[in-house]
Length: 208
Image (cartoon, rainbow, N blue to C red; front, side, top):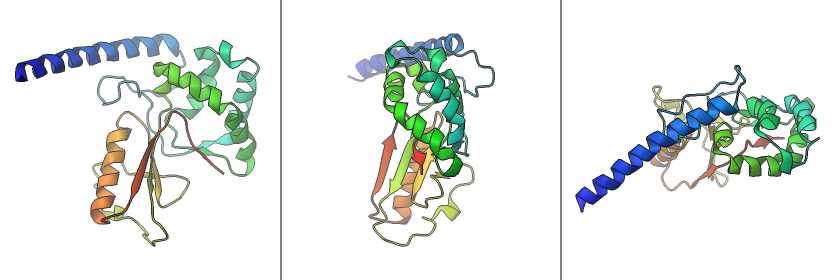
């Protein structure tokens, strides 16, 4: 039985290695933008997630012109290079700031977000650049000021709050799922019986 398991695991490892090579080749062929910050898909859990995490949100106003340009073509005719300006802006961002002067651009992106997400779901090499995970604590009216995060290990990436909300966090990058799971475990250990929710998404949430 164990020899069979080893054989299966060995095949999976070889398949993962080949997948990583394929994704790397796709990325190099698909995206020519030298300013896009990506990680090589050879050291993480999610082989398709290559965006480098950023702590600051994207200003919604920056999306307005790229969205207008993309909207000139019907979604069925979209190609990778058509989405590149928007993908480059969103890559690794925790969320979109849609407040104040950023509202119009954020709304414009909302109008195409359904078709945009559909495209990402069909193209892993693009999806890997915009793939955040959100964690939400169901505080239920409780006053929990810091969720015991003052003692969060300094050796780990520090959780990013969503829009300043003290009970929503966002993770991006190749290790986002592991980091999100660690945060859930850390908080629930400190605050027993607290319900936590984790959302894996194909696009970036917006703060209004």
